[in-house]
Length: 547
Image (tube, rainbow, N blue to C red):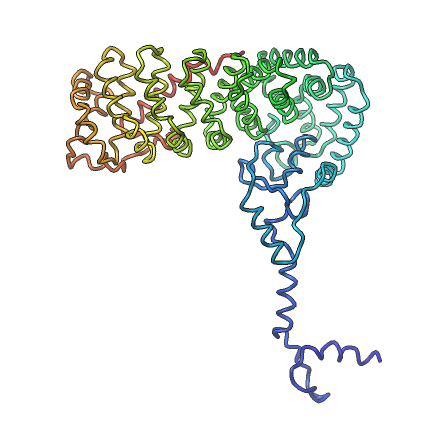
């Protein structure tokens, strides 16, 4: 019986009659039957991109981070709750975008393979998945710390024991945070772990537990107000304190204050604290990844927000937009429309409009946001109305023109501006406001930007009488002044001279080393003009001020 088993296993793979005992068996490893078995086995396994690396199962609600990575939404929420950053993940963040294309692909694959479409995991299941993904020592410390926080009273969070528990949790973890997440430098292999733990322990601020506990658990609103006010004062102390306080847990607490209606009285201090945190370059990307932009946008949109809270929200977005890596994400998260409304509405206070204008200017350096402004209903006309109004303050008019210049850098923006009468409006400013050198600079820059690659511009400029205004600038300015060169090039573009073909096609755009000019109209001498104006704009709007 035992000798016959190998023969029975080999029979299904033979098409011919059994051979004689003397002839060697032919296993036919590449037969169609065996290939079919392998294909079926491969089809049963879900594609790797459909599986959440934290949960280890098919994603029911995939969301994509600004870094491009996709995870199950419930797992990211659990990561934020546990203040854990898994390897390969930029931040446990709520600043996510639903990955609808991947969700549809997972549903199609499930239907084709006969599987049930996955359901979102429960909060407990997601939390357990995150704890499984953590190192054993770190997971044990998190469970112990959460149990201690749950059993202690509100007052115990401010005690030395609370600070000690924070230090013990940090020092017991084997995870070495990157510089971008905690504020300590990455540690090379072979470095003493005790030294690493000491660095991380020093980076933890004892105020973190106090604020988080009050915001999450306090029954009296007055306790939340006092805690957030204390945080605002702490962020004014030093750069080191601001870096230490910019943690996922602290940012999650600030998000809660901005979004929950019963915390409305603490919103002014919460938005001011965020403005102060954005003063540190190391914090800017961290704040966006932690999901602070949607609450700030909600403060701008809400009619119940205090004017001071709205002003600080615009200032925080301005500070975040100074970082090039944040601009596209801030635009995607919906900041452009409320900022446009704030800048173009005279009903708002001048400081809030100023910060909104600077935020829009830096956001519009990204091509994706230029298109958003161009497509937003009424935005080009509103910006031109502000720039043309003699009743507006000069800094507000200048900011509106700065945004117009950036929007004119893209083809869609040029068309939208010309449809809104930008050529005639800018020509009128050049003709009537002859005493303002600042407005002259940005008006000429806007005309120059609209002339590039547009045959339609010539007819509109001639009809508006732009040649006379441009000749005045070209004749009055001394050689070497950037706006003089731009005015002369725009005049040549109006005459369609052959030697300016590069200006008509926009092929001469280039940036210097380290110059952030993505999507802008920087070209030749205009490059130094834009760099100087950015420096003046950033310094004049006070993003270095503490609130």
